[in-house]
Image (cartoon, rainbow, N blue to C red):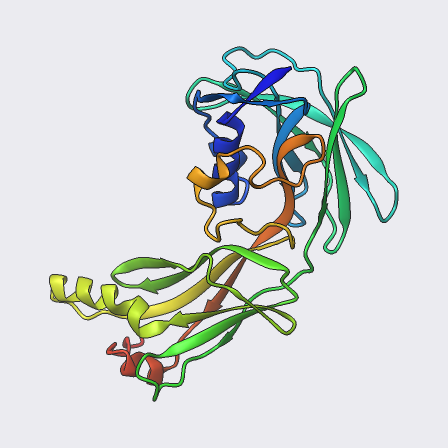
Length: 291
């Protein structure tokens, strides 16, 4: 029986935090000898309807997951569109990372459909298979409800209709002082028909006014961008925040049968919103002159 390491889970924590940025997955050499398993693979990835190629990183379950040589592994990857029955095999691209380790990133050239359900299988030559199923969320973007300019706290709302889950939520305040980002993970709430956050315009923009005072210059708001990853229903952190120290424990967060890791579905969204002059004045900002 092979021992599973925490390495894949460190990589998976990075995935969950940055919505599957495959090129940034670095893995540390960290073995938990007490954790034993007869599962066959660990895999991390997601189906993205905004890309024309899908990808998943696959690990064999061994004592050490940090691979220093570009050698093949005993794995074949397939996906099945459960609505049509179409099944395709993915290609293995051995990838070298910044720390000189190698990883097996399997990919396939197709676009996942909004609302589609896909099964991903990783098969070994002895017939053992690990698999996961993910449903792509419907297409949506944020609808912004502006704060009442007479409300001192200037609390507004952003609502994503039909969104099963939201991860990596952040609000970017664009100004002549630079871009100031406020992270709202994991503060979305389930409401009728989707997911919603409350944003605090006055509190969020105080750092911009402080920067302006230090520079002895007027501060102008040039727009607000609401960003989030609209994710599949099961892509919800067990601790609410995707804490790597929690996710590192094998089995804490997984939807893989006969394996470890997580295969979800989701995509990035961005919505631009310009506050009214009344909101800007209420928050203490001058109106930028038209050039």
